[in-house]
View 1: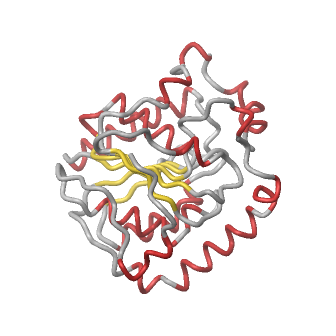
View 2 (view 1 turned 60 degrees about the vertical axis):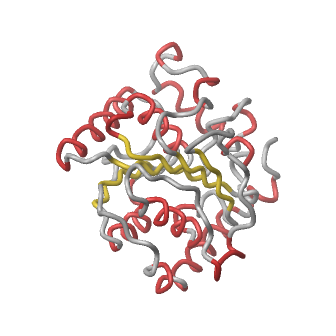
Length: 251
């Protein structure tokens, strides 16, 4: 179901509020679990670029991770340059660090992250998606569908892309899907994993446009990245902040 017009119109204001709340809680965020400093590649959403993920990357870098932007400019969808560039970027990071890479993708960037992991599972440690509609049945249910269609002239031929039903299939690495019932751009139901091992869904209170700058989202990402490689466990909200996590949809 398409998000309501009220949620969509309020997205910019709510995104600003998300960012403000994160600034206010930054001392607490810096107390998040710390991992082993492995490499993390962050992929932006549709029409966004690395600047949109700067806060997230700065935060993860402060926790000791080797954090990378995608360096492919604005996300215009599945163009040949972006599809080839993402794969080359993942391979270069893994080759340089000699460690598997965690992928964090926001919206369309999360769909790209999942398909990168599907194609290169040996290079990928885990995937974390932020409001990514990988189970979207009808493109018209997304408020971003018109913008995506306008960019279609730049995209590779449909025959070169995976069919929509494949996007929803499980990927061969651990994955966490972060979603919000207050998402005003894509239906939250399209952003959650189906039940299965090493797959989970974590709900937060967030706008779509502010998800990458939302304090609860940043905490979940930090918690997931801090897990020792090979010993993945489902997310558990910290006892003093359970109110920030409305529910966990079973997976």
